[in-house]
Image (cartoon, rainbow, N blue to C red):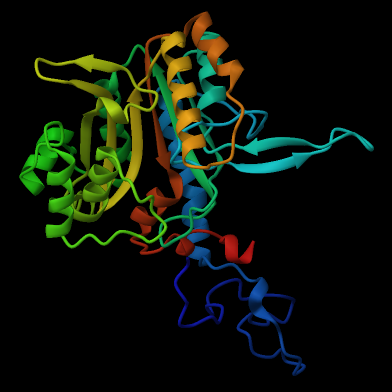
Length: 361
């Protein structure tokens, strides 16, 4: 849940005019003595709202220079992601009159529709749009947020990391990112090999690091659950303070929609995550292009959702058809725009860069 704000008054510097007399929106009174309810006012400062507009402009400039096409795709769709860790927000759509309502879904990202465009050979594309995720509320989460997602045909995940470096340097004036494999990251920070460790070793490491489980977590955790706990609680908070950190080649079991590559000792998912100031900023993939493997993964995720008693969601047949028709070899990445703005403004909470959070929507 959101932390309680110590001072709920609207900042003086936010929208200081309401009429020709320039009455301040401060929760006090007007010149006529009438009290004003300032709960309507934005949470972000005028400086933050202006910075948001400038950041959107800079991002578009970056991609224009590289001839990457901006696209728009539907955010209200008949199907949605099957990932057990993501929860789309359902919406009731009534086509006309007294027709029976249909359940549609606000998308957790524009990925599926953008891949349909890629399969139609549209070339390199990007999108700036709203995304929606049920239950994600906190200091750096809001159920409705802004996402930047882009795809590069002909790129693998390392080439896309190169472009991510260019992007962050252009937007935030960062140094070249540190790159480290998922395996080396755990060895460096926890003296633990994530590809070889037993579940007992992972549990003991979590105990050593004093990681307390949330009471709402499942009673039976998988190795990946323990690895994610160790990553988010013991490693992530230390990453990216001097320069960005890009972690690549995740365990095969964490592939999501990434390609799998064999190494001499194990298989890895060709994906990467970007961290700055102890916060995950972006998640990229050398995209899976085999429609048959995608179908297997989607149905496997659907089965896992059912085991966890998550709501059933229709599988996206359009995405399956797109991959079976032929998705070009490509890499793609999703980046949290609001978190990028937080970094640019040195903000501590997402509410500082949003006009209205879910509490005031």
